[in-house]
Amino acid sequence: MKRRQAGLVVIGMWLCATGANAQAPMRMIESYPTANAIMDGRNMHFSVMFDGPVDHAGSNLIIEQNGVVVETLTPRLNSQPNTLYSDGRPLAPGNYMLRWNARGQHGGAVGQGAIGFKVGPSS
Image (cartoon, rainbow, N blue to C red; front, top):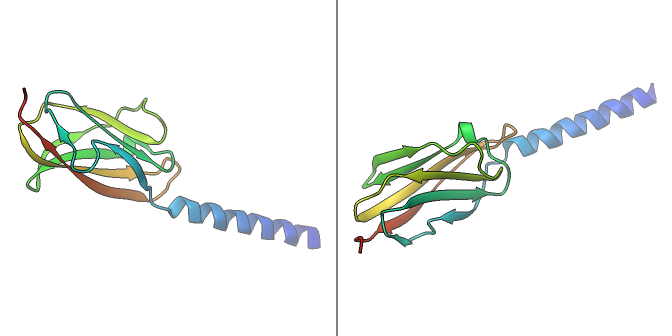
């Protein structure tokens, strides 16, 4: 009987530990563009790297200008496990915001964030 109780305690501890990890939001560790970067506007590539694997299909990247959505990007499904990556269409000069909603691959909470960047005139 003690053996069974010990087994139940171990299972309970494992469930608590994995449940706590599943609820941790995704944290961004690197992005392109970086905050306040100036891009040329012709070749628009966006990526956000996180501290754990993301659900590419359940996440998105959004480009906004003055609070208005300019483009919603679909992350490539074959990106690195911890990175959302997408190409965007050329952007006119101005100030923009890259927003992300990243869902953890194993049921983690959604991490959200934003980075401001600029597009300069094309040369």
